[in-house]
Every structure is written in C-alpha cells, then in structure tokens.
Length: 277
Image (tube, rainbow, N blue to C red; front, side, top):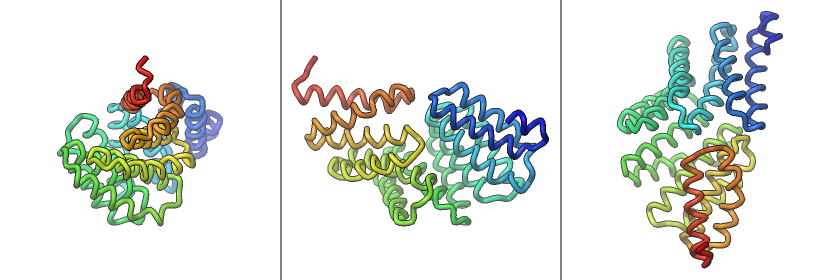
C-alpha cells in the first residue's frame, strides 16, 4: 500500500489497505484493522472519480459494520458522515442510502429511537431508487430493530418478514450477510412473541447461511438465537451444543451483548440438565 501511494497510484493503495484490514480480521487484531481502515480513509480525497463511489461503498460497509459490532459510536459517525457527504456531492442514491442506514445505527446506539427510524426511512427513500438488494435488506433490518426498541414487536416482525420475501433473490456475500441479520432478528422477535419453534426454524437457516460468510459474528449471532429457541422448546442438549460451539469465538470477538446472552443460555441449559454447579 505504501509503495502504491508513493508511486502515485491511490486506487491501488486503497485496495491494498482494505486487503490489509482483511488480513488483520483473520488475525483478530482490532488495532491493525483500524490502522488499515484509517489509511484507506485518508486516501479517499485522492481517488480518481471513476473509483470513488465503489471504493467509498466498500470502506463504509466493511469498517462501518465492524465499528458497529464493537459499539464504536465515534467511528461509525465518522464513516457514515463521510458517506453522506460524498453521496450528496455525487448525487448517488447508493451512498446516500448507505449513509442514512449508518446514521440510523448511530441513533440506535445513542438510544435516539425516533431519530433512528427517521434516518432509516430516509434510507428507504433512496433504496427505492436503486436495485441494490443488500441495501434494501439492511434498511429493513434497521427499521425492524428500531421498532423493537420501541416495543412495537409486530411492526418489527412485519419488516423482517417483508425482507424475507427477497430471500429467493439473494446471491452475493453482502446480500447473504444482510439476510442472516434479518433471520437473527426475526428469530429474536419470534422468541419474544412466544413462538420458539419458529425461532428454531429461522435460526437453523441463519446458522447454515452464516457458514458461507466472512463475518464471524454472524455465526455467533445465529448460533445464539438457535440455542435460545432450542432451550425454550425443551431441547436442552441441542441448545447446549450450539451455544458451546461458538462460546470461545464469541469471547474472542469481544461482542459483549451477544456473549452475555450466550452465557445466560448456557447457564439455563446447565440448570435444566441438572448440573447446578
């Protein structure tokens, strides 16, 4: 990346920094991954116009998703603000949709739920003007999660089930990733609504699909939802098996909410199986 930058090839340098970030992901190194993303971010203003939209979209998707998983509000705000600025300048509906979905995430982390719903609806406006399936799924996901925060469970389920209608069209890695997120959230909503059998069904689909994704947290989230559903239908051994299969990974990824949820499920399984210690 440094070689390409010094040679006056910012596009190739940018790609190399994203490759470095991917390598850091495989090594579970947050500091190296953030460093690589920062270097790519600093090259945005130097990219040729024909590469700008695609490269910004790639950076925003990869860094934004990672920062959101870590509940890093400041980084999310930085990344999604850039996306909106460039989207407005280029009048590009994909970047505008990306940016507003991201701002909905920021509002969600700040517990500004009404503002988050408003941002997601703005993203929906731009999604309707593209054929970008992954963005459509991501926007519906964010609306579903925000409605859950308002305890409007039925609206949340409607958003998820609407997104599931796109399932036959899903092909790309980003689309599959978005679908897993939808399935995970729908499984949680079914659980809250008292339908654990539906949770098990959608959780099994999510876990199978998650194995095709690079994002390790997808496997953790799908396995946790499946294990929770299995616990509530009385399949304690299966629940324990799925929960323990991702326990070490969840701890290593340091996704606190999901790891805490996982620990609760494991504790309940042990208790149900008579292992009080």
